Length: 240
Image 1: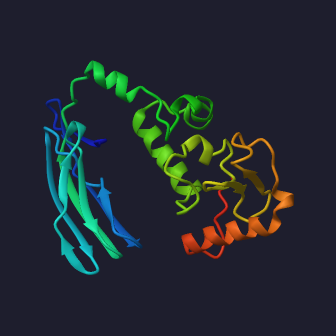
Image 2 (image 1 turned 30 degrees about the horizontal axis):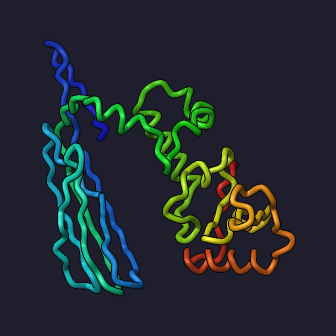
């Protein structure tokens, strides 16, 4: 977690103090079949940090007692088993102090430097260098990446499946959205134009665009994504 420091000069040197940070999350989920939900929103309990927090999870308005699962570096996951209905999570925390850096182990180098299938860092070198290479300090890079994601991307339920990676969902110019299921892959912009369609059974490499031969299917997919996202049109993520 990043920290922000205030410097005070009292005439006899400089004293450094770490400011408190307030974080929170509100998540509302409509569950259509019995399942297990796992939320990873709580602050990790690290040496050097003082955390005052509140977590509440409800199912159809009734409070739930989640199972807390402790992960690497004391990260925390809160798990609940629910049926069909409405799940709501509210979390808030005030964090004071500065966490002590954990010692780097050999297994950490293997684990955290390995390219992820979900965020393929080895495929984003050129993109990252172009967008963020001019920023020298890590705090500015974090701020710029967060701003880029917040202003150019949107979460659209149903537009990808659990094994899709970031490289396939975020093209270099970030002007398109994508949909994928077991049979079809579709790409278009927020105006549902510039459309591409691929038959994954016959063309798993997505090399032959067959959009012109399946216009009714394109409209069906577009409407399916709109219904899932509860939108009248998909946002356009292009540059200004």
